[in-house]
Amino acid sequence: MPHEALVHEIRRFNRFYTGLVGLLDETLMQSPYTLVEARLLFELGCKPRPVGPAGLLARMFHLDLAPVASELAGELNLAPAYLMRVLRRFTATGLAEMRDDPENGPPVLSLTERGKAALADLEATTNRDLARLTVKLEDKGAAELSDALNRVTRLLADAGL
Image (cartoon, rainbow, N blue to C red; front, top):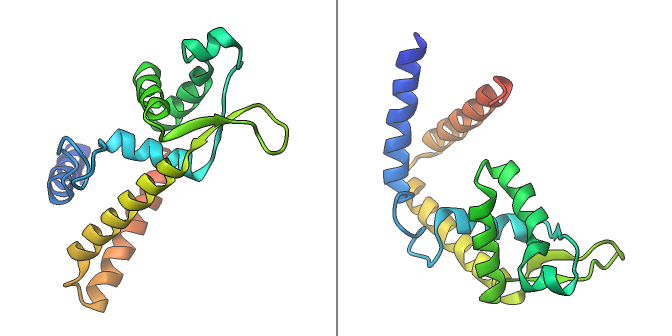
């Protein structure tokens, strides 16, 4: 298959899937969070992130969040300044906070109980919506879909994307 045709097929699938699951909506799955915000909640829920210097000026201007924003920007291929704004909003609204590392390392940014609850609600809603999309698949169709998803992931990972 020529690469131009493959690009067309990938874009066609992307349009289909983003429309199917509502990724182009202003918020994700009828939640108060955008796709980027939901992903940041997930990332912070998986692993607290070390923050920068915790001096008074750094805290006042949220400069202690810069290393986290930079690290996540690299992982997610997003603008650090944008991620910094989202992280500031998360700390201002009580979804995330700076905590001392329990192993005496540098302070970390992690989800608060409120942030963990928001992430749990988001994951439950997403799981319910995805289950609704696949509920009518027979076992054979579910296995085919799973195989196709794994195959796409493997092919793109092997290609270094």
